[in-house]
Amino acid sequence: MSGHDKEGMAFIKGSGGNTNGKLNGGHMDPQVNLSRQVRQLKNYVIALAVLLSVALLILVITFSILFANLKWDIENHDHPPKIGAQMNKVLEKEELCLSCKEVRLGPSVQEDLMLDDFKRKPGESGRKEDEQCCVETPTQLLKILRMFVEKTYREQMAQGNIKIDSSTNTEPGVMKPAAHLMGSVRKLEQPTVPGRQFPISHWVSNDDLAFTSKVQYRHGRIVILDEGLYYVYSQLSFLEVFDKPGAIDTGSQSLSHYIYRYNIIYPHGGEESMIQNSITKCWGQNKAFGEYTSYLGAVFHLRQGDELFVKVSNLSLIVREPKLNYFGVFKVN
Image (cartoon, helix red, strand yellow):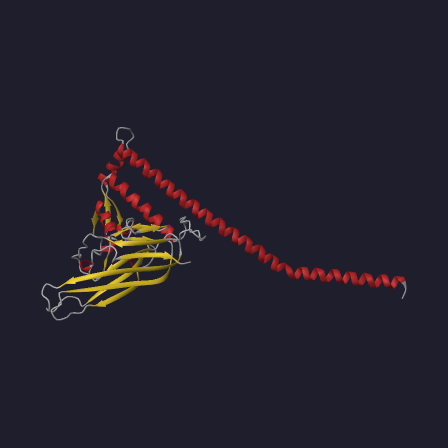
């Protein structure tokens, strides 16, 4: 074969190699484009999340500034213009009302009593959930603004838009989120309202062996700040004294013990039963008293903003001994 023929063959092979390379490169283009689009989408999502966080922060700051200005003006009436006085004139002409559920912070008795600071009116349907809270003075307006901001903050925290730094370092020697509450020595009166479940609204949280670490205690409830798996437990001791030994008890034949959780973003009023136990009371001939103990404990996945609390069927039978009654949690992962 001549030299010219060899050069021609080499040229053809080289051209073929380049053509294959272009085809392979063209075959990879859709994958490269897809990766680029995924990266762009991630950037858009991150930017949107940052934008929403900044918008929420601006909203909270704006409310805080308005709140501070109104509070200062109410406390310093000698400096015109008087925002408080102006608002008072507006409220004299027109009543400002909100649905009470828009500012109600939780299901506890204490949080319901907060609404008594306002003029409470029944809704058109007459149902409690349609009740209206009305303000008539600048001071009431200040309180309802504070509660509205607090509820908005809790909702955003429960949805994960606001992160709480609970410093959950898992290194040896660093304590994880935990709490141990002890029973109160105060007598718990049975409410006169009808019902079968009554929350325990007071525990000892910072005395003797009781403590809270990287969780919050609020109105008898443990508030979770860091999502994860938790062991939740409670023990209650009951004592029933019979006035007439041997007499037949006409009351309830069982005692019930529950652990609930509440979250402002959950449906059906935000409450959910987690675990429960029932004790059947027994009677004996000439029996003067009955003692009963109930223990509950299980592992649950809890989210930020969950509020845990204990309910019972009869508050008046709980023994007033702190170390016989307790309620707590600790994170296991």
